[in-house]
Image 1 (cartoon, rainbow, N blue to C red):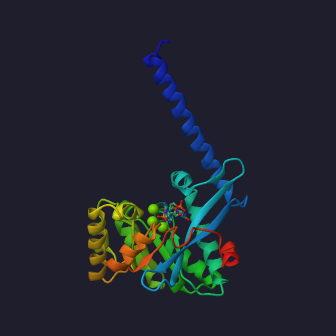
Image 2: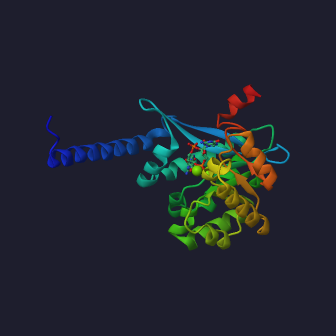
Image 3: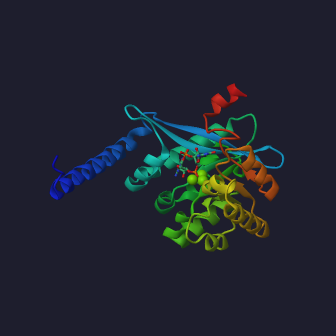
Amino acid sequence: RAKATLSERICFYEVAMDEAARDRRKMASDLWSAIDRNELHLHYQVQKSVSTGEITGYEVLLRWEHPTRGNVPPADFISVAEECGAIVPIGEWVLREACKEAAGWAEKHKIAVNLSPVQIGHQDIAHLVHSVLFETGLEPWRLELEITESSIIVDKDRALLTLRQVKNLGVSIAIDDFGTGYSSLETLRSFPFDKIKLDRSFMNEVETSEQAKAIIRAILALGQSLSIPVLAEGVETDVQLGILLDEGCDEAQGYLLGRPMPMRSRKIAA
Ligand code: C2E
Ligand code: MG
Ligand code: MG
Ligand code: MG
């Protein structure tokens, strides 16, 4: 059988590219109406103290139930939402909804809300946080915002000013996915973060790789010397949790401790 000619292959590639682009455009337009159609939901994933097992908070994770696509994972739609700008109203919805829900909980746990760099670039976050706390009555100490290094890289002055304003409201700031960016140490130096979230990739290898363990140990030492607690993400096994306990890690989050789920089902399960 004859192989496809180069031009046939290029043509196929272009069609595939075209379809991918069209799919993203369709997804983008669906995202703009997702809030009004009640397609967005919040899941919560527990965070615990490694040494005592006590609950220290819950991370808020966005879920999109699309009428035909089904559950679309954040990995597939957050970047689309960032590209088209829909992350601004969506992020605002997440913040408001999470604060509203948490304000009604019997136990006053902290919540950690993810913030996109695009949100920081496009709206007055401090003003938004201030109004949402006022509207919902959530105590500021119960809110933590998780930002990644990319937030600071885009427009450093604006990002740092925003973070300072938010901190002045009594809200805490965590640096998410720490250790994967290209200038992690510079980022730590530029802002007094309240928590370091060690990226999940380190957990993957900690059981088998002495190097991974050494890096975790170094980051924990760094956290300790800067007086910033460290939370390990993606903890899936007892062995991993044991290592974190030995190494003096403060907090952990992962499937071993609890899967992300709606707060309602958690209460029924408990
Ligand atoms: P992230 O902020 O680092 O959130 C942690 C991710 O790790 C979540 O994925 C969570 O379900 C997953 N995870 C937790 N424990 C484990 C584990 O033990 N093993 C494994 N393999 N994974 C675990 P999820 O919910 O799919 O979210 C992915 C990313 O999407 C988040 O990463 C965050 O960057 C973004 N995201 C989610 N919700 C929001 C949101 O409301 N706003 C913004 N801007 N981004 C969000
Ligand atoms: Mg996060
Ligand atoms: Mg993370
Ligand atoms: Mg991550």
